[in-house]
Length: 419
Image 1 (cartoon, helix red, strand yellow):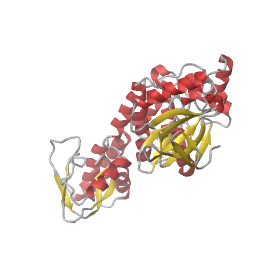
Image 2: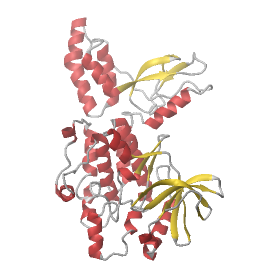
Image 3: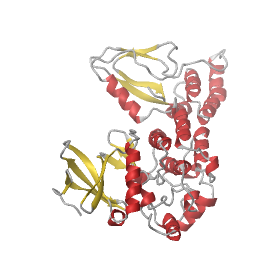
Image 4: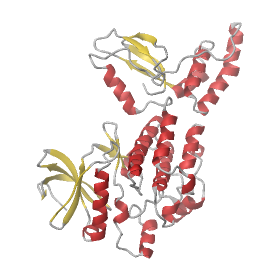
């Protein structure tokens, strides 16, 4: 156990951050560059294993060459006497395991933000032929700034590299997070002791997304053995049984990611990431996008008009010949169609039709509930006030601009989307 003031090379220990199966983690100061870093001291079982150290160092060099914003940056992999340690960037925030343990299921928008960020990190790793093998909430870090980092790439593979084949197989199943994954997140092929490839990471990411949406793991059972058996043979528990409703496109993404046969899953996180982004586009505004918007709007020299992703309001359905017929159309035709569009993920069309129906049934409780699912209220401020705000679909730069008012705007209703 290191203490404050101890030195590992030119890294001065400032305090302990935590400990786990892969060693003790400390916050330290890089005396050469004057920055704070995280130092992970590897346990003796790895430090004394030349083969394990060689693999870890090779993984560290590979990851250092990836340099992706959603992957923890490795600065160094070194030794001081008999102590072997890795130096990484220092993060501020908490891991996803703590977030889920404290608050349970996430809102759809937040879950998608995290899932897409993890998928982007894994996609970059897969492009560089690196497989994580242990994607789980404890290895996903949520930064206070809104960023998301994937931790501990490939490290679990080498921890029991000196064991025989029989012992390795036992470790894969009974020692979570050691060699090939963690119970509840590892893929069927990992449980069987087979090679873990990119599709294994896809399965684990599917488990992660499921848990973020429901607060539960997809194959969770009372015992470890039952959980492993369910992962191998049982379908995931339908999300509806947890009181959660998701759109058909997202349900299909989950089903493909959680397929038992790796050949029927997304072959790498690249493909899954593309589908998650396509689903998210025009459906939800990510937290990072919202922060960017607010920060931009509050700059004294904000450039207007701003690009805003909005649905082009079109008038669908039949023209009402009277107020009563208009209400009848809105309640009997428009609202059911809006619900169908929401369920199928067609948010822009749903918002457009709901906006038309609103003119016929102002204040309708059912319509307000639908608007809550496809829009949000936005405050737009500038310093100084009095700036004109215009909107345009970000994905349609040739479409017409629409003026929505002059700042400050309070409670401006906008479709969900990237603004």
